Image (tube, rainbow, N blue to C red):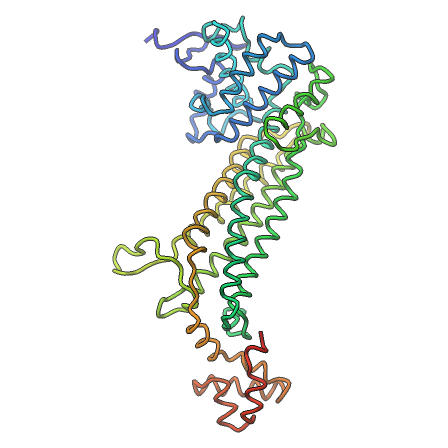
Length: 461
């Protein structure tokens, strides 16, 4: 058994670490201390940690604080982390040491041991590359974990969420055009309302998501303020005066995104404002997606005993007992995702208010939930759009039938006979199972010419 381990040391003493592991003593302690969920921070977060360590080594070499040979080895190792080569070595549970110290050390140790190998040494030989002295130079958990949240969230929004939002917005716009000639009954309070175009309903969905996207874009701008160089509390202790600017410029170069120094570094250190603001915008999107998905379920309900004004694509059998049943499963999936994002935002809000003095110690759980929301929204919207929304078909005959039966058509009679008389017509139509048009004709309330004038649904919409 001894041959399967190597002995590593940290400030608390000796620790047995698996021989082939690239992580070290502090990561191993965290694994033993926090056997909580089996959940780990995702690929985008690990990539962000690699970007930070690469940028830090670059900046430290530029200012002469880190030997060029060591910096180059660290940068090569960090690039492998950026590329995903060592994801399996990031093993610390989400629920870990406050602020993410264990997560930061996991990155420091993996990169240090890989850099040691690149320089011809054996894992664990910290005389060649030290995880704290070299990989973590001019850094602290307190600035790097916060910065990793911002980098990973910004990349997730820019590269995953916004493009797929654009796709579903375009799909809904096209459906608005396709369905514009179809007139149907509007509904308020789930009761009959005045007529509208089916296309107008879909244009409403489109513009709802356009506005939700604007909110996400606006909130994302705060993510681009990153406080590298703030170190432990924002003062930049042990960092060269030029380090922060050089490191942040390198982050911007590696990501292609406009990361910049924060307006106030102490504000950045004290609060996870960017994450909280973005999470609120994601919750806003989730609320609207739930509404749209729920509407599509209602509009497609039936197929014979519901509204059935539209048909959703059949993607799988809907029942284990009722043959031939097909359910709106993609819309149901979207609703579940929306509920999860609302829950994630509640967690982020709770964790965000736990900031105390110069630090928020809840950053790992903020990171996990924020990135989880971005991932499931991005994947869910894509599946919802591709496998449901794009394939929606209208039922013009059913729309016309229900629209003609709507008691709310009596609203159009107000200018001719007044509100009270129009209400009597509606009640009579309901009581006799007739249409509003039939009642005013049968009762002789209006002439045929007046009926054609006031009950012209094309004018109503």
